[in-house]
Structures are given as C-alpha cells and as structure tokens.
Amino acid sequence: MFQAIHPRRPHSFAFFAATIFTTLVFLDSPIRGQSNEVCWKLKTNDQFIIQFDQTSKSDTTVDSRETTVQSKTKIVMTWNVSNVNSDGDATIQQTITAINLLVNGFTRKKKGETGSPLLEVTVDTSAPELTSRQGKKLLKQLQPLLNLPIAVEMSSTGEILDVKIPPDVAELLNELPNTQNLRRLFSPEGLKEMMGASSVILPQPLNVGQTWTHQSTSETAMGAMEQTETYTYVKNNDGEQGKIAEFNVSTELKSLKSLDSTANQQGSSLQGKLLSFRGSGTLLMDIENGYFSNSKLQNIVSTEKPYREKLIKTTVSNEIEMNMEKQ
Image 1 (cartoon, rainbow, N blue to C red):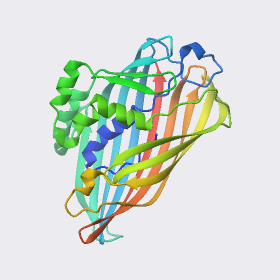
Image 2: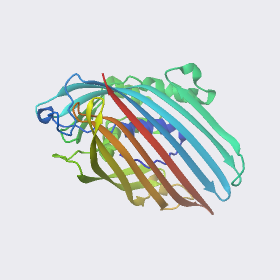
Image 3: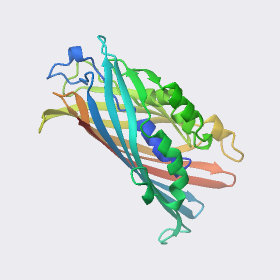
C-alpha cells in the first residue's frame, strides 16, 4: 500500500500515483458478506466515487546546492461493479474522471536562502483554462486518458486475476508518447504488476487485535525497494453509518536494489544507499456496507547516490488520503 516514490520527472507523478491508487482494492465474496463480517461486500451494480489526494515533497542536495520540488495531485475516479460471480470474483469498471496537478520548485545554494524559482506547473483537466503554459503539453496527453473503461477482475481474497483494456482503448494508449512511460503504466501488464505489488488481502476470519503482513516491491528512480507492510485490526468505532473498523499499518523497507536502467546510465553507481525509511497510516472500513471509506497514509524515505564525483542526497515525503463514497 505504501509506495516510496522518488519520481524521475515531477509531471509523471500523477500517473504513478493514479496507478498505485488503483491497487487499494480488497474484495470478499458477497455470499459470506454478513453485516458483522469485516470484509468487502461489493454487489453487482454498486457504484462508488473515489477522491485521491496526495502531497509530495522532494529535497535533493548535490554538494551544497539544494533543490526542493513540491507537488499536489488530486484524482477523481468512479467504480462500477459490473459483475460478482458465485465464487466471489468481482469485475469493476474503473474510469478516471479528473486529474489536477500542481508542481512547483526552487533551488538554493545553501540552507537559509530563499531560493530561486525552478518551475511551476498547473494542470486541471476539469478546468483546462486554469492550466499553466508549462502544463499545456501534459494536459493534452492527460485528456485522452479520462473516462477510459478499464476492467479489473479480482478474486474474493483480493488477488488480481486480470486487467482488461478494450482494443480501441489499447490503440489510444499505444499512441501516447513513450518518454513518460505512459504506455507501460496504462498497459494491462503494467497495471497488473503495480496493482499486484501493492494489493492487500484481508485474512478471513478477521478479528480485533489481529495482525498480518504483506510484502511488495516498488520500482523507483533509485532502484527496486522491497518492503513489508504490517497491518493491525485495532478496534471498532461507532460511525454515522454504523460500526467502523479501524486498521493501522506500518511499513519496513527491507532492501534497495538498483534497476538495470539506472545502473547502465553513464556515471551512475551500481547501487543507491538507503539512509532511512518510515511509513504509517490508518484505514477505516464501513463494516455493514463493506468498503473502505477513508485511508490516510504517510511515508518518508532518504537515499544517497554517487554520481561522477558528486554525492546526491534525496529525501521524499508523501501524504496520501483516499475518500470513497457509495452512490
């Protein structure tokens, strides 16, 4: 669920975040979906609106020169449950309806300085006239991705069985520029890989106080980060719609392995060094209606990497919130 992100390009962050967010799907069979059971209870024709907000800050130091890049990403999507079979396997038609992105950054020669502006990019698919000059190219690339139907099939345990993209949509994706890895991120293989790496399976039966773990690998500009997420079913609360199950999650990074693409770059080292990592969060589930109504996640990762005669130190922090509303 946590992804320690060190983006190669700030403007590609929205795509990465969107892909990662689609992995927050935990399903269970409606046959087992009694009101007191803690699991997803999706039914055919269920509809949801999901809003995903992520704030990211990246601080990079090369010698004494510092660069800070901040971004805010808002993604709105819809889920339509088209089918749930007798085994509990569900098919969800997912569409992204809006993407807003704000990126700004500055550089400074030493701590304490105000810094010089580096970039400022605004993209708003809901109000294109608010898009900045620097964001118009990205807006043009984003608009064809809105309202594309993507079918995701998952088992009752949350395993991602398949990601299906209609031929006409696949043709459109194939026309996207490959410089930002958009084709890869929105391909069936790319979506399935990202979703499979970050999906969480709710064990059954599930009781207050229970703890379980999930291992995944995140590909970043620094390399492949292998991590273990530990989930704890903390307690039940009384909410407006009934009982709310509260879960805590903490993330431990096990290792950092360099990517071949990174290692082959001229002057780059074969291995980045992980300085520190921490991640935590809270998830709330509507027990009676059977869906996660809210999640708040935070993570921060610090790395360093030699480049020629220099040493690049980077700290990236992310705050993520998801709100899901049944229609």
